[in-house]
Every structure is written in structure tokens, then in C-alpha cells.
Length: 250
Ligand SMILES: Nc1ncnc2c1ncn2[C@@H]1O[C@H](COP(=O)(O)OP(=O)(O)OP(=O)(O)O)[C@@H](O)[C@H]1O
Ligand SMILES: [Mg+2]
Image 1 (cartoon, rainbow, N blue to C red):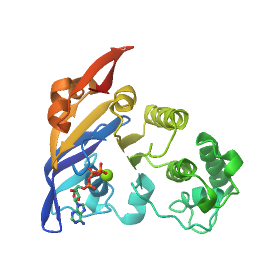
Image 2 (cartoon, rainbow, N blue to C red):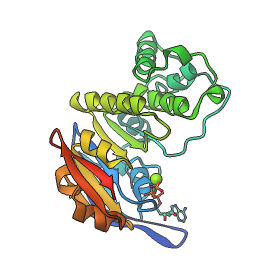
Image 3 (spheres, rainbow, N blue to C red):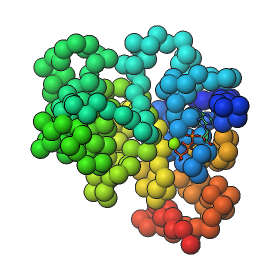
């Protein structure tokens, strides 16, 4: 369980998160949704200790995340950032191999290599393993970054808009892979803008607006026309297919 308690954060003289209290249940996918500028990336950054809160704390189970030594924290939690700059002169295989660094700095064991290869296969990168990152398309680069994050095999995964640049088939591949990992006990928090995908794959939803929690609950509870109208200031229709909400802007 990740528990954000009363997280407050400011930058540039502006309050960006205001007393945010929200949970990400263990072994589940939590979708972080809300309009541009709501504070989703900031909240994910605080969970991943990329930023320090002004007030409040992030609990991992019964432990205060701030008290966990960095090397141990890096083996428990990994984060995919929204905009990641990667060294161009690196092959896909090398990049994914970096994911093993917190476990085995310096060299990859046979087991590390096995994990790297499995994660490349998971992200359909086998044919691209020896390509340099800067020769890849946007979606191919995104899949390489996701494979690097998966290769870390941490119990907690934080992903900021992992579906950026991905086509329907690869988006489905990523979400199915995250589902399988959550069923295997991993705790996943992911920022998603596609609410129908969020409804299809997430177990729990946290909706942020203007730096505060606007709604939190199951997709059924959060994805209603009333909640979404207030959240986005836009009219939507919510239909149901196979029991899951499908959200259409109108
Ligand atoms: N260093 C900073 N200085 C000033 N304002 C900042 C800073 N970092 C973030 N902000 C502001 O904080 C707000 C929240 O930013 P954040 O990146 O968390 O939003 P988001 O919900 O992830 O949005 P998006 O969906 O566009 O990615 C935005 O209004 C942003 O402009
Ligand atoms: Mg963001």
C-alpha cells in the first residue's frame, strides 16, 4: 500500500499540491487522472522521492518512504517520468540493461540478461535490440523506456503517461503487461489521460484537480458524467460495454 498523507508542495511561489491524501492499494493498478496542470506528475514525483514535500508524507506500508535509504528505495520502487531524455548513443539492449543497475551495478549477471531479454520481448523490442535509441520512432523509444522500468522488477511501479506515442496494439500490450504484474503482487500507479483505458484496466482511480483530490474510488465510482463534468469542465457520456465504463466526450 502506498499512502499519501496530507502532501503539500509548492514551486515558483505557487501551491501545486494542497494536502493531498490518497491511497494506491497493494497488488492493484491505480490510475491517476485529471486535467493538464492538475498536479499528477508532481504527485507521482513525490511518491517516487524525485521531489520533497513541503508537508505530509508518503507511507509504503507502515514505513515512511523518506526514511528508506536510497539504494534500498531504488530496489523497491521505480518511476517512468513524463519526459525522459535519454543518451542517443545507446542501444535498446543497453538502455534496458540499465534497469538492472540498482541490483547489480557495473555488470549484468546471466539472470539480469534473462530479465532484460524478457522485458524487451514483453515490449515487442526483439527486432530493435541493437538499434541506437535516436534512430527509433517516438513509440519505439517509449517502449524501450518502459522495458527499462520493467527490468528493474521493483514491487512498486510509477508510470507517468506510459501510453504516450503508443498505437492501440502497443497500448494494449503495455496495459495487459501491467495487469499481469499487478496480479503477481506489484503495486502500480499510472497517470492516464484515456479514461476508457483507465476504466478497463485500473482497479482504483485518484482524480486530481487544481492540486487537490477531486474524487477517489473504483472506476465505477469516479467515472460518472457528474464527477467528470466537474473534473474537466466538459460534458461526457458514460456508456457500458462488458460492464466497464466507456467515456465519450460530447
Ligand atoms: N517548477 C515549477 N515552477 C512553477 N510551476 C510549476 C513547476 N512545476 C510544476 N508547476 C506547475 O504545477 C502544476 C502541476 O504540474 P504537473 O506537471 O504536476 O501537472 P500534470 O497534472 O502532470 O499535468 P499534465 O497532464 O499536463 O502532465 C502546473 O500548473 C505546472 O505549471
Ligand atoms: Mg504530467
